[in-house]
Image 1 (cartoon, rainbow, N blue to C red):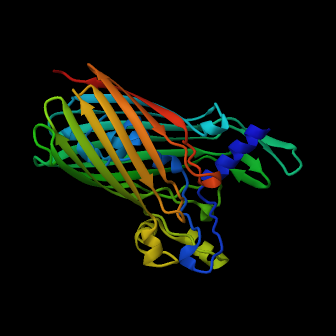
Image 2: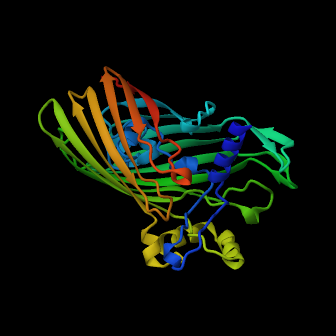
Image 3: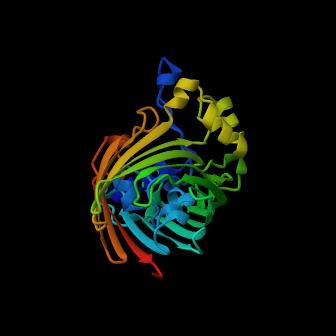
Length: 380
């Protein structure tokens, strides 16, 4: 029963319709987290990016580029690549059946254009629901997945543009519970990604990019569409610089800045009704421009990730990074490390997230290892 209670608490934390604020004298000093449905889409899906503090917008292309920036895929050095990743979730609570798995890959049609595919799957294990008296009222196996398809091409010698389409399915509960009938929520979203490759032939130089991700409709878990939730539409900006020391060693530094394009919630019944009635396109604009606390609060909603990666002989990689978020907007602040090994066409990557925070601010991935495998395809 204890594990079931913990899992249920985890589900309630990720359902995007639940918004909690804390009272404060100054509206800009209260805890006011921007929440969405399917937050799985905001989780770094691969070990390399995770080890670098969850940076990936402007780093070099790999199998997971479609999750970060489709625009860099045509600049990949290999004909194609396929990646597999597995991450335990809430491992600190010893929940063995809660995990995130992903599959991703690309294939270059020629030197100008490429196709990409991806799948993310989030399992929350088996949940036994009970009422206030501890009586069973049903069970369910919550799960979410997103299926991606993308196309990208070079715009000249240095720039790349990618577009993606995503089908999202979220099954948190089905059937009647406490007088409400729940169903699987689903929607469709799109991505637009830009990448500038400023690196020289040896890989040294500055890359940068911009992404608009998860631009799609709301998602509803009941037949009452007025209670539909926003999905995590996001604006991302990134840059990465690589210094090549010699034929054997190179060092890269990356910086990503992200901002959810979702309205900031406000208190009161009228504000809640206005929040729910906001249209999809309007929500993107409000998510970028307005907040109850004005511009000062809006600036607090930007998250920052920094990371570094060192390669030796293109076979051994060492990585580290840090992710930062304002304490009033989620308070996710944690350090990451990782390593990579590449032999022939096979690559293995590991990432570790250091324990951070406590209670509701504790990172669900604290003290866990993430594993990724990559298989390169090269006609040469």
